[in-house]
Length: 213
Picture 1 (tube, rainbow, N blue to C red):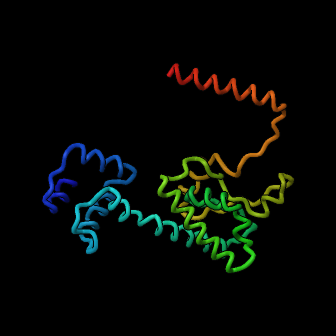
Picture 2: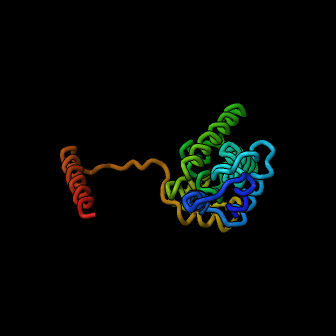
Picture 3: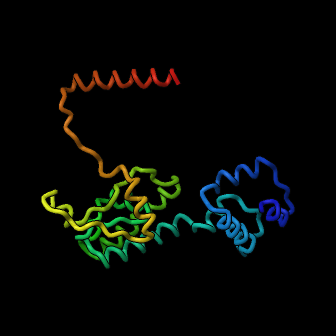
């Protein structure tokens, strides 16, 4: 497929060239890659130049800015339709991480003013783009976004199950794989001297493990 596309630009491909493309686009199915390459050839703005992997990614997913605004559009619709009381699970872990970093679901839904809410939307899109460029969030995000009902239950009664927003299968994957969340704050239970000694022991252990490796 690459050979055919590059022949349009009078270029021959090498094994190394193919390897770079394959590694960069391995997360996409072959039909998506085919559509991205064909779209590049037909693009009146950049189609006169041979495609790079980033060109194909942009045509498959849109720019990081596009993705940030699209994600915010989905979040905004959910805020207006669902509100702060219901816990939610989106089908995108980056949404969870960004909203958690911004203070959580309830804070977003209870903005002080429409102007403040618009500002949060811009901040969300900016943070979302940064994570897209960084390659995602791994499993460092909360499994679900907690609403007022669940927060106030305090475990004394069963709160309503979270709503799944978007693709059900993807939402369940987000729910299953999430491991992080708000910054953990715990009591040390030890004196400063004991903590320093423990830190030194851990450092020595890590060095030993590295030497074994």
